Each structure stands twice: as structure tokens, then as C-alpha cells.
Length: 466
Image 1 (cartoon, rainbow, N blue to C red):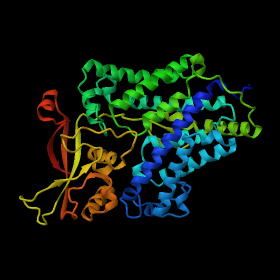
Image 2 (cartoon, one colour):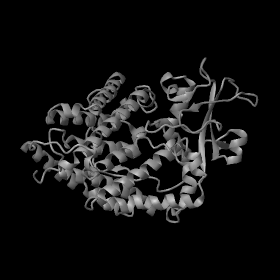
Image 3 (cartoon, helix red, strand yellow):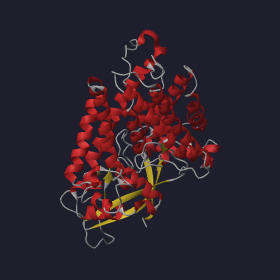
Image 4 (tube, rainbow, N blue to C red):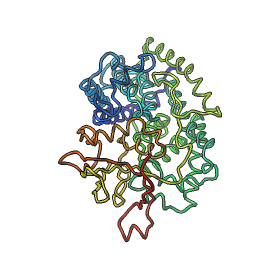
């Protein structure tokens, strides 16, 4: 093969593309199931209002042409169907140009959603999916050899993802530097999972080892990705193992799984000997395709200047895009760790006077802590956007503007689209007369408390919210 091709990575490309398509399906399903309450015409942050305030140049989206809730639903479910077809192998069953158009359609549809998603879509894994998704457009299919230069760009993406997360920690909270952050993180993370209680109660030396392993995964391993094989594959495997640890210990939507999928593109499957079929006999890549790959690579290198500069800036931004299409981004997470966990608890009463004798009933959310006896659920890779924003709102009232007041108004109106975002509506027969928001201090129970009470959490009333 020519300089252009890396045929030994055919299986790595296959795993990356199929995995990426599955994550696209999930992302579009999340959008289709949640948008009416969050972003619809009568949602908490309506898209039509937002479109009147932003231009296409600032936030490119198909919805600038026209918006309706039906059109959004069509975009979301079309994206989910196309993603499922690509996961099933459509991209390898059609010509190269057809596969490229299919990946382009997936990217354009999801880009259109993210750019009108406002606070509900302000997470790093949205930009990560778009950046990886655009790269997939030019990565080719089974009718063309994997372009070597694009495999290097995937490593560059993985390096920015891990290195950026490591640097934001190193520059941020002191507990990362003294290896004590994991004493708190499993308890105070946005959405603890079924095993988070057990992770929290691990011995302190294990927590220190977790923090030290984090530095290896986010500083050493990303640099080794650019070393010759098999060292690069070993580094990718180490990143995959650490991501699986994060999958087990918490709920971070599809961030960890997408990171794993990207890391799989680094693995040289020729190292597996006879366990996998030999690389197929690829025909030479078309000239137009080679030119397109070279052009995209040049553009990606140019767009990488600001994200690379950001890595070494004292004012490092995390989860930021320097272009409106999210083509090359900067990433990072948990530069600061909360030592205590506070939760917003929303209650309603049917008593119009809301006096001392009023009976207040609690609204239960699908993922965030509420009832202390309810074990934290497994949510990821699904993404509960409202539950995540409730965690941010508990950190600071500024994160609750302007959607929390609209959430309370929707509960008073018994808005069915908003109520579908919740796990339990304590007023199934009709809306409450009043609602209130309180701040509670939550902490994991001890082993003894869990055995005696069956409660995973203990909570103490702190104060009314705001």
C-alpha cells in the first residue's frame, strides 16, 4: 500500500465506526424523548425564543430555516434510525461516497440539535461526539483502506481529551495534587451509580491509588499513544481500563463509552495474530478521496492551534469550542471537587394556604438522589439532562436561571411533557396548589446504617433554596 493507507487498522476502524454509530443512536433517542419538556415550543428553554436571539453564523442549525416540535422529532428519530443502520453495517454496504454522505447527515442533524440545545447541551461529550463524528465522515469504509493520517488525528483527539482533563485537575483543586479528591468524588459526583456507595467506602489507600492512576491515564498514556506499536496499543488499553472504572463508579452519559471507542482506533489488531482475519485486499483509494483527506487534515491542523494553545494556558478553558461547528475542541472535567453534597428537593401541596398542617409531597427524579432509601440507579450511557442541571443548580443558584422557575410553573400547570421527565409525580389527579424548593445536605450512609435502615443516603434539611 501507499503512504496513504494503514490496512492493519481495518478492524480498529470498524470498531470505531460501529461504536460511534451506536452512540449516535443513543444521543438521538435522548433528544427525541426529552426535547418537548426541555426545548419544545412550550418547554423550559424554548427553541423558538432562542432562535430569535442567535444567528446562523453563531449557531449553525437546520432549525434556523424553520422550527416546529414535529420537525425536531423528525430530525431526532431520523438520526436514530440512520445511526442504527450505520451500526448494522450500512456504511460498508454502500459506495464510499454514500457512506460519507450518511456520516455527514448524522453529524449535521446532531449539530443542528446541539447548537439550539442551550444549557441542556452544554456538556463536553456533545462536542466530543461532533468532533469524532465529523472525523468519521472522511475515515472511509470497507471499500477503502483506513487513511493513516486520520488515525493520527484520532490519537490527537484522545490526547486532548485526556491531557486537557488532567491539566484542569492539576491546575485546579488542591485535593488532586495531594491525592485526596476520591475521598469525596464518589459521593458528590453529579449522578452516583449503583456501585458509587461501595466505591466511596473503599479504603483511603485505594482512593489515593485511584487519583494516582488518573494522572497516569491522563498524562503518561496520552503521550505514549504516539509511540511505536505495541506501546501505543498498551497505552490505549490502559485508557480503556480506566474508562471502564469510571463506568462502574458513576454515571457520565456516553462520555466514557465514546472515549473507549476512540481509544479502540489506536489498537493495532495485527498484534492479535490469528485471532482476527487478515486485512482485506483494499483497492487503491480514489484520487478525489485522498485529496479530501489531505484537505481535511490541513484544516484540522489549523483549527488545532487554539485548542493546543489552551492546553498550556493558565486560564485553561474546558469543554469549549473555538469554532461553531465543534470540529476541534478543548476538553476537561472536575477541576474542582465538592466536599459536601447538596440536593434540590421539590415538593408540592394541595393545600392552598400551605400552613403548618399542610402535607408536602416530594417530586422524584429519575436519576438524581431523592428518597434516601432508593439505591442510586444505573443511568449511563443514557443522559438525564434535567437531573444533571439540578445538580449544577444545587451548587449555585446562577446555574438555575432561567429554567428552574419555569420548571416550577410547569409543575403547577401539570405540564405533561415536563412531568414525563420525572420519575414520580405525587399529584396524578391534578396539579398542586403550591410548590417549594428546599436545599438538603446528602451523604452516603455507613455500612451499619445501610444494614439497619436499608437507606443509601442520609439527608438533613439545610434551608429554603434562594
